[in-house]
Structures are given as structure tokens and as C-alpha cells.
Image 1 (cartoon, rainbow, N blue to C red):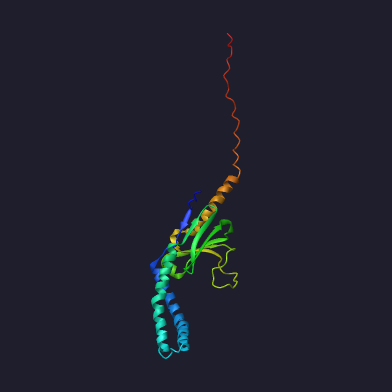
Image 2 (cartoon, rainbow, N blue to C red):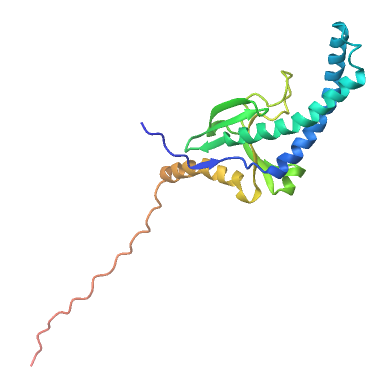
Length: 215
């Protein structure tokens, strides 16, 4: 059986300028963490192996710094580029299907019924605003939150979000229109047809009668 074509397909926009800025910020934060924690652990490991005299502590930290600056931004850029190529959100009459990537690495696929959705809204950060981009959030209370760890947070977002779409696309409104389309059609079909106003009785036209004329 041939699968129906989606009524609406949304894919995130890979904006190289935005991703480059994100890569630099994440690269800077990742490099600091790599130098502080990775450098310390590496130096302690070398010391335990009896190799601490061959490499100074400053040399280990500089090595971690160079590795972080060279690899983390480039790795983030390529990972996000590949993830966005394979990310898609397909909206049908009664449900939508999606494929995205958690932390740009772990693929996540799913199918959400429209009746399970509680809210749809758009929200973008400052960097997205400079590139006229935004994100669409689809709240599904029954889904696990997207945060890190297993701690329970009742205020955490639960659902599916579509990142980096054009603001002028009005995708939030388009999704709502797809969801409400079949519901509106069903409501129209269920409502009784309006009664036709009664047709007034038209009096019969006078039939000319022939009268005998008296002489």
C-alpha cells in the first residue's frame, strides 16, 4: 500500500553564519573544559605511568588547548550539518512523523498523534533573531523532557521542537492549520444543513372568465 504524501514537510535551515558562531562559542567552552579537566587527568595519568618528567604540566595544558581549538568547533559544525540533512518533520491528516538528532549524534524517530498535542508556539534566541530564524515548539505532555540527566523537572519542555526555520514561514500557523483542517471538516459534516426558509404560497393567477354579454 502506497503511503500518503504529507500535507506539510518542514526541514531546519542550515545557516552557515549562525552555526559558525555557535561553533566558536561551544568550542571556547569545550576548550576550557578540556584544558581544566582533560589536561589535569592527562598529566596525572602520565605521572602515574612515570612519564611526568618527560612532559611538563604546561606542555600538557597547551596540548589540550590546541586540540580543543582545532577540533571542537570543526566537529560541531560538521555534526550539525550532517544532522540537519537528515532531519525532517512530516505532517499528515491525523499525525506527524519526525526524525531528529539528540545532541546532534543520537537519532530519534517518532510518530505523534495530533490529539496528544497540548500547545504549539514559536520561540527564538538572540542569535536566531539576527538571522531571521526561529524554532517551533510542539508540546506533548506524555513525552520525556529533552534535558540532560534523569532528574524530574515539571517545568521542562516535553515534546518535539523544530529548530532554525524561517520566521516569515509562519510554520506554527501552518501546523495548526493542518491539525485543525480535518477537525473543521468533520465539524462541518456533522452540523445539520441550515433549514431553507419556507417558500411563500403564490396565489394562483386570476383566470379570465368569459361572460355572456346581454344584448
